[in-house]
Length: 323
Image (tube, rainbow, N blue to C red; front, side, top):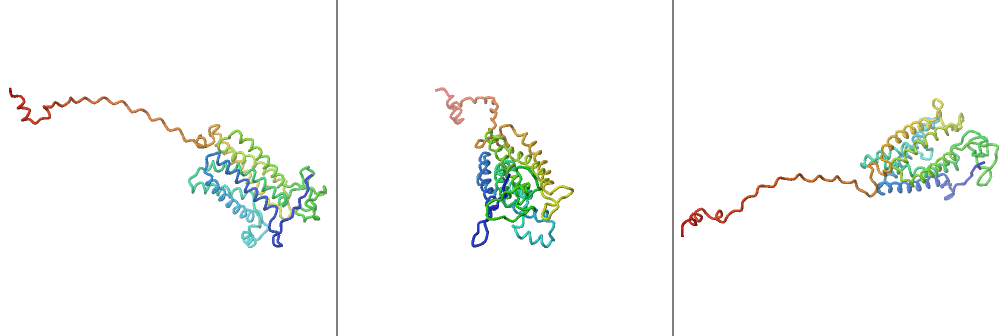
């Protein structure tokens, strides 16, 4: 039994400006960035470069996330309404669009700065698991991802029969078994917390570079594909279906394929290697030992010049006369 949370927004100048969703998302970004820097340090990356990479991946992630949500998910809007929604960043975000934007920002940043992609992707994936947990907790308190009705013990007790309810009373939560639903924000938060715990345990064994990014792709793809079957359907505001699947499920298939490709690539990196080239942070590749120069034949000794040889010819001839 999970209560329906009704956490109020914090009013500023008589306007509810600070929402619980925003606080949790901001917390996820800060905590995830800190963990990303820590993993980057383990991989021998410059902290300034890692922070710069984080900014551009988060920026492009939010931009693409917003565009994908408006253009792909909000299919009940006219094109005029979609253009207006694109100008309003509050009109919606797509998680899979955010991942795609972050990957795009990471790739472009690495190419422009002549940096290898895999170590930065690995550090970003390490921080993403914990950051994603906070972000999905924000979705849970905002009830952004309601699912179908259920009797499952992790179902959330909604106060009304429809997926989007108004708050009931002044309490911080509502409990009642009459309208229990799956809440995908809660389920993904639990999944992300499990992955983050797995990461913290794996860190003790100094996994090779690429381990975390391969793990998050192969883990999240199947989880997201299955969870989307629990989403509400055939009502206003439900995610669109194309041939029976949501856009996120098609994206999840691509994520699974990427995860498998990453596993193959990472498996070729030497076991215990923290860097892609097999070296350790702070160490330099062992220089090749130069071969000794070939022994040269000793030069023929030039006989020492006699004093007579240094004298002029006339003086030498005079020295031959009898005294």
